[in-house]
Length: 381
Image 1 (cartoon, helix red, strand yellow):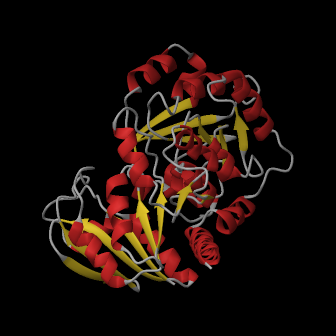
Image 2 (image 1 turned 180 degrees about the vertical axis):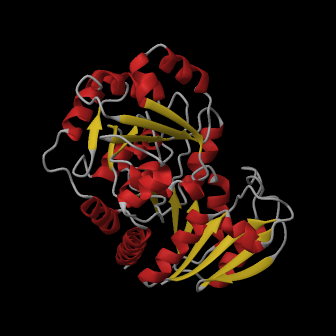
């Protein structure tokens, strides 16, 4: 099967080489590699500031010049890229993003009837107002949609942007390349101590809800006096509020350490040191911190939202608690910490490999492409 991965935007320097640009698109290149290993013939079409070609790890990348950075205008149709995709004669065209309705419509129109168009959700929200009608017209060109959780598509369907007849296929938008390490060696490298060790690795913003995490954690300390919470982040919008909350509590002052922004290249020892990952997101399209934790064998204690239900298979590996409920979080944390038969790091890692790894995603996506193609071909007959 010939699969074209199409990615319009990319926030990289105008002086970036093709290799540098692709190095900043790790999820895209990992998806391509996963599909190749699953048995697909893959070419990636990426927007760039000049025409270029690259061949990395068995994948051909065709970079097409245009005004793509940091993102393609929703009113601009990249005709040259679409012609390049058509020349490759793909069986499946996989387009990243649901905000490019007009582009999807014109891309579909340029393809032969035997090609099928799949659009993948990456956290975008549905349009409202007059723009919604243009988006509905464009998205009607898709033969199917990929969402991390099917329920994330419901808002799009309620607004009529996705028809109920268009298949919604549940597939993660990304995964993790982190590996499990020996916990003792990881803790020696990271300096993390505690029994148990809880890790926060998320933005300090209202959606991630760090203040509820602190409330729940504080309430466990009378029963978990040796517990420690370490907090790493990228964006620090609520950092003043987090510091103020910790300052009001002697218990938090002695049990919480703010690690600050940690480069992703240095995060692996932290996840391998932690017993549990804490996350309180109100919404997520993928949940990369959770996949990172599972890849390293740490057990997630995460809010009960659609994406996290998928990642944990409804709490089969990990624990779910109602969003924004510090008392429920306290109870779940105590249950998890006191479990007699807590899943081993090896068991958690095995779950990740079987269900959430890029290899697993590649196989799932290829099977979805095959099923879609067979279904449409049967309907045509």
